Length: 170
Figure 1 (cartoon, rainbow, N blue to C red):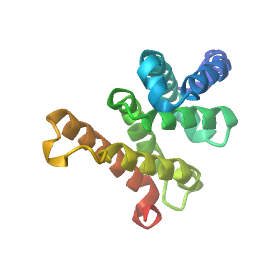
Figure 2 (cartoon, helix red, strand yellow; figure 1 turned 180 degrees about the vertical axis):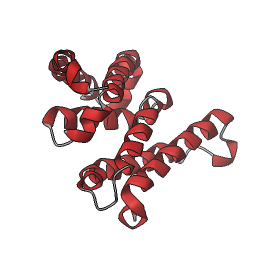
Figure 3 (spheres, rainbow, N blue to C red; figure 1 turned 90 degrees about the horizontal axis):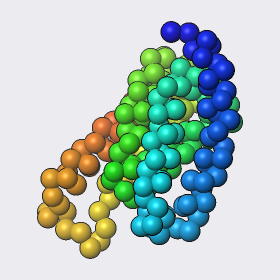
Figure 4 (cartoon, rainbow, N blue to C red; figure 1 turned 180 degrees about the horizontal axis):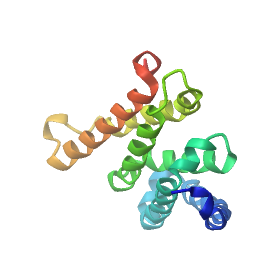
């Protein structure tokens, strides 16, 4: 479907995201751990909204990836992915997979891949942080839930490597 026919709706949605981002940043400004402790539900809702918008706008993200509003959406979704909450950080995984598929449809020499390398480099770093267990956790005592989460993050790493190519990832 031609995304241009939805331009009036997209414009209204995009106009609301700025204030939502401000709320998100205000929540996190007290410190991520404190914010998650007291406002996890609100953060979760904001992340869901951004991910839903991102998923709906993948074609627009592909064509206007340098646009400030699109960059802002990607930054918030990236921040959500990097939050130390399995529930919240799992929300964007399908979005990143879908975007990686779209990016990789273009030949490696295409400028599209270059435009997304920075985002996927950051995403790869976030993935590594999310998989790292704290020093107080015994990796051999990790439960099935932690193992399943780390498996989902591994899928994200694979998407990152597909966009970045192995040499860039190193």
